[in-house]
Image 1 (cartoon, rainbow, N blue to C red):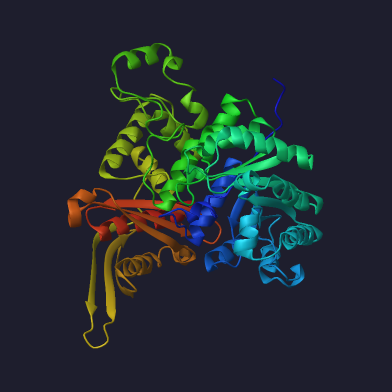
Image 2 (cartoon, rainbow, N blue to C red):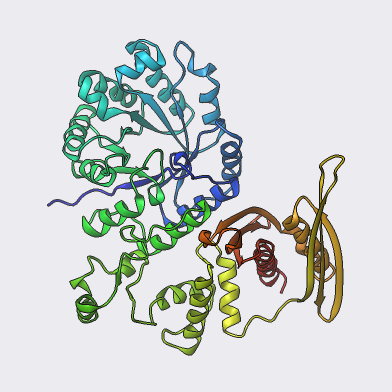
Length: 523
């Protein structure tokens, strides 16, 4: 078997992924996810559709002033409208205004869509494709052309389907991406059609698959097998209907199983998967291949006995290759590798099996049993490690806090008020502040109390606030997990709090957020 050329990974979690039911990201979330994807090493990050909504517009404005180490931030849009000059199409101009180095445009391939949906002639559709590609290329953009419904169209009209991708290629498109938009194709069909497309345009193509038949991964692999050089997908398989090709599955399959170079260190894959789930406020799929919590779990009997002697008897890869770990239910040693890796990232050197590591691990397990999750709360985890090592001296001592609100019967306005009484360096601070809600009021009162000792605290602002009910069966008595994202305008960090009381959970997350920043910037 001859060596396969490198395959690039195109992540569309922030665009196609957000079309999935229940998936939503704030602007802050999108930036944090993009930063994580960039650090991980994906090659393209599709940020959204400029102009389609305020969040995407804000994302591109923020992305344009940031430095990206590995990925090319990509804007997504459509070909020009029918019977309109490309220079006059406002949505094409928005693609240029996004200031991304790469642009992906989607065009119609299927005559059914051209005539019935776009209501233009087949010839005009070809001109729409060519004009848009050429216009973007004249403005110095790398252009990827998504051939929508290519595999369904090819079944109905192969000749016209090939004409559409030839039009894009001849106009200067850097890559043609074949899309199984409805997710209904079978691997052999994808393989055959991809090979014909590559032959027709004389160049490799990309592949974009959906998982409606449960074959998103298999179809992408089929295309790669005959020469596709890019795979598009989403983290954890988010996407419209049942989702897209899951990058957390196909990336290790390509690199570890097929030996196809991606140029990516996959040891951070588990952390990336968990991070995106947490920001999306989606429960983890413990049975996800490679990255799920159960992916390398052994519960006893013959399996455990065999694995302890020779791991590959019941493990298809070394879990460490994707940042996962072997879990033997009867062992209390599972989890040390993750603790060590996270602690090292914080600059704390620990030794596996040491008393310190066991102390950290015990505290992590205790808190996780209460409902804590630290994947997207790296600041809280850092404080936890330091507390377990005896390195966390409280910045202040809480004496009490109180929240109240009252609704005026005349104008239906709600007034929230918080009081905070703390000691900072022996001095008592007592503050009262109002806010839009109890959490906002608490945040304001705590900042006011800390400001005399730490005036720089005003640089920190809360950018996102998420609530998850942990044990929903308890009804209104259920435990609550609060995830807070904060920033100082340069960096962002996450903190977490858990309690039966949502205000207490919020307080714990707010305290961690401010303490993390003070220790890092002031102390």
